[in-house]
Length: 288
Ligand code: NDP
Image (cartoon, rainbow, N blue to C red; front, top):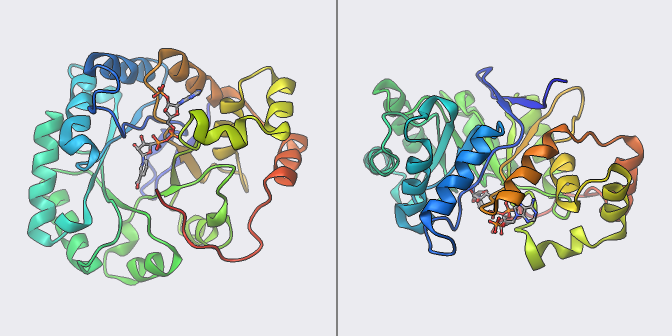
């Protein structure tokens, strides 16, 4: 069985479920437990690890660095520059700080976390310099809606954008109206954040719903696995979306990795659509 993969704009193929790291390094768990969770995820094929300079002021990057020490090639490391640092010089300095926190020579992917006051051209120039200097392998964006994306793609070099990291889950489908089709048209996959709606109480409206429960029972899986399989479902013959759930509890990591092999059929998807319909009109971009 071939596990679902997404293809970045440059052709790089990656498993369709990766790992997030927001709130790691904040003391909710020990740094050891967090790094162990990420390593378990790598063992189970969750190759992409997402972090950001913003998360715990760099301590999340340090946890990720600890997790990938001695196994750099097993991971595809993503970090993000804050908009307030996204000037030409600021981006380069932020990237160097992130590399130092992570203890690595090169980021596999570097994203603009969201759009701020700096012109996109300037951040893009910094990304190009970082590629030239070997500090990042490729770049992308996060939280850019369709109009911002159109602007970016119209810039010289803008089509080298590899992904747009966006909030996307069964309960928040607004991007399906125009942003996801626009990105798919340009072969730019989505990296879905909050794919399990942040877990716990915050995701109960989904995990306790009759529709999700019925699909989970039918496949003998957990409601969270249904949410993940739904997020990365195949559309038009390919997977345009990857999911990056964050999990520290080992049973959560295992659950998430097992979702790679869960295939939802038309009956499942119709049931989920009925309970959580796709958007009928343009919606404001959902963010956290
Ligand atoms: P998620 O939807 O990934 O939810 C994470 C929560 O769900 C954690 O509390 C986790 O618990 C729990 N969980 C994970 N797996 C399971 C499971 N199988 N069963 C039950 N509960 C589970 O939310 P995030 O906000 O963390 O989003 C994912 C990642 O996306 C972030 O970590 C970050 O890397 C990125 N992100 C990017 C943003 C951006 O602006 N670009 C914004 C927000 C997130 P526990 O950890 O206790 O195991």
